Amino acid sequence: MNKTFLLLSWVIISLFAYWFGKKQGMNQNTPEISSGLSQGIEAKQAVKSTEQASANKGSKSKLTDSKVEISDDSEMIQETREIKMIKPSEITPSEYRSSFRERMDSSNPVVRLQAFTELLQNPTVDNIATAKEAYEKLPEGPARFSELRMLSFSWGQNDPRAALEWTSNLDGFEKRIGSGSVLDSWARYDSDGAIEWANENFEGEENPYYVGIISGMSESDIGAATELMTSLPSGRTRGRAASILIEKTWQIGEAAAVQFAGNLPQGSLQNYAFGEIGKKIAKEDMQRAVQWVERMDESEVKVQVSEDVAERWARKSPIEAAEWVSQMPEGEARSESMEEVVTQWARKDPTATAEWLNQFPSGELMDEPIQRFVREVVRKDPEIAMTWAEAIVDQERKERTITEVKRVAERVAQQQEAQANGELQQNGNPRDGGPGRGPPGSRPR
Figure 1 (cartoon, rainbow, N blue to C red):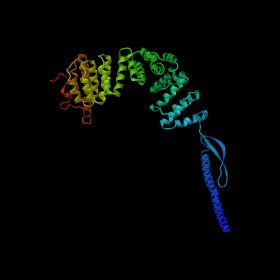
Figure 2: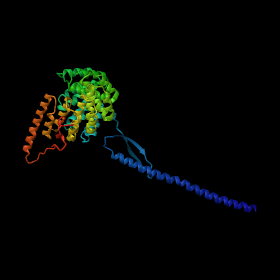
Figure 3: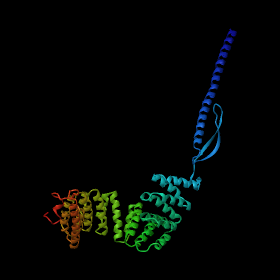
Figure 4: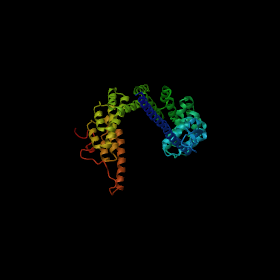
């Protein structure tokens, strides 16, 4: 019994040992297969990287040699190249200039401007010379104005006098853009030097160089820039400089812009500033602009602001603007605002404009709106324009307007005679109930 039991146990143990050994053998073979597959994949990837690196030979990228051991079925060792990205600091001047010139040949303005930006961030003598050469090869016209501004501004940081000598040889609008950009740049770090140069290089009161100087000064000292602007004589230069400062303060905030305008000397300059602010408020919120005007006391400022608000509103909706103006109390502010409504509305619907004007009693405050209406319709219908011109109250204005209408009517008659075949047709003949119904006071109301 015991011998039988022992024999049976020995057989079972032997079979288990055989099975266990076979199992272990199968497991040991698995890593070899996986390793072979893995090595094969890695080898193919490495070979592909090598082929790509070889294809990139001769490119502008700098390459550094390194050897990488790759294990594949044949356990080959192959040489590869590692691609290294170029940093701007690693580009030699000759490479930089070559790259810049190539991009300047692009018809894409974004590519060209990017090249200018990269080059002129460091306004060295060589970089300025390269940019100037590239700029001068560009086709003339507005398409290269952005490049001119960048070149001039950057050059002004390096050698403003040399830059201004170069811009003095430009023509027309390019001369103004170039010199203004140089002086803008110069005045940001040496306003006294820029002002001295401007005075030395221009004779007369309307010195256009002050526009760029004031623009540059406003970046660091808006008070000094304002003081310089207000010291200029009334004219185009002061107006352009004032526009720059209005934009600058508006960027800070509406309150800053209003404060800036309020601190200006009373008169045309202050009126202009408030008017521009009124336009900006109206652009954002017309009703808020209207409320702002209505809270103002009668003054030159109110006249200017109401006129500008009415002009912007009439462009969008002349009927709504006319309704607002009609509710204004009689006075100069209403008269000036009516002019703007008439200008916009008469171009779209002269009949409705005439009917609206006819609601108001005649008087000197109606002379300007009527005169504006006459000028808008005279080319389309000189006869109706003459009827309205004769309703002007102020005698001098009336005679001047009638003379103007006669001159235009004569030209229209000549054109009609020259186009006897009907090629030239009038587009504003009076209709029933149209402008021909007459000016204020010409019929019972």
